[in-house]
Length: 308
Length: 308
Image (cartoon, rainbow over all chains, first blue to last red; front, side):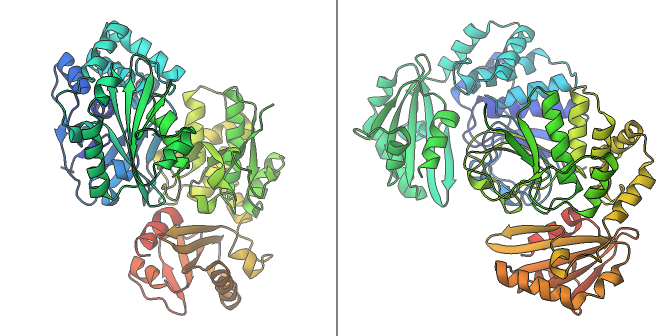
């Protein structure tokens, strides 16, 4: 038998990365491909654990790296810096993603389906519809949870009409109250007390590269920004360690208030001025408050990247 | 009114690049987007001119470069080195392509539909079907011609079942005999007598970049390889000029016999050994004959790229 094709989302997996991997495996099965398997590149966060527990399924298997020529399917990411160790020599046969494309290349033609939607699961939902596959309750909850997570219950500016339509229909199939279920799920991900400073800055950290300038934009969700800022000093210590260890030029930690849709950034590194230029605001005590900013992809990354 | 969105294929446009640009403009119109326009990045070759004359339509307008933030849709290519001058600062909103992905990046999420098929037009054909749009006779001939060109009448190893299915259905809609029409069209593109050596090596030349090593793989179709080789000396002069002017490390000219499905390569440059390693054959008189090789994308590029 041929080796299994591995399906995975990005490092520091979020709910979309985990749920879309699982759903993509099921979609492949419905398409008649039984030799693909969802795996994950990191720990399950508390929000995602809430979803898995709600349904009653196990997390996909953890992998550390892939062998040369391993066939892989990437969901919810494409940048090699966010992918598995060994990705450069793997055989990428398909990508399903909703991010910009960068630091990505292949030797051979492949399937690549990117849409500028709020969530990867919305693209998968459209694939179910296009092929007229039935969506079962588990699949509906998996996709709905991914959409709720990525769009913060449709409040993020990354939200599109496609995400809204998908979430509405998935809620009906799953027979859940989207608002109630969604708030419970999001809140489950905001309990940051059990994390060390080092763990906290790595809960959802994206590694990026602009012309050799390495930077990280990390994000945590909370219902109370000030409770996180109480730990600013130790968080800065952890961030400085990450900068030293990985030769980073910039580390941004976005602390996002999911109820009021604002973010406070803690910013360190020799390229801190990229953030000041991006938002035309001075850092004070290494911090800046950004009203109405909740989306890393749409409201943080493009402007910071441009000024790196 | 907002500025028009420009749709174009690669430099040195082939039949797929031109026909798919025109068809994509029409698809956008059917989808309700009336502000996009097919353009082209270079001269129409004789094969494509045969198609346009057959239908009785004009070639898209020629453009030299794009302004900053110009919205563009790329068909049949993604590598910036094959695209329009200014592409780095354009706003790429969509890509429809059937090539590997490399030397490509965006700041923002976008629509990207890549499929590992023989031809871009096959992907567009599937889009017509998915949306249940009617295909008219002109559109059918445009898409059929692109498929015939890219797959050499379904004989190239890049041909997939999707291309076969599309071409069969398009032939019926267009009410043409695919074999007869296709051979006439392909032969129209093999008359190389009117080209200077410099023109000939640029008819269908792809510029590539591997870790800063610049190389070109050019291809011409013929029904008689020996007639082209009679001009080897002047062709080599033109190739050497191209190498000097553009700082190339390698220039490969593939002379492809479309009737017998073989290719003879003329190879110059300080990285010529990449070709020798790729095919495990020694160059003799700067040439190597490759039996059964007709596809740049599938049979030339990956192995040469790997050895650059």
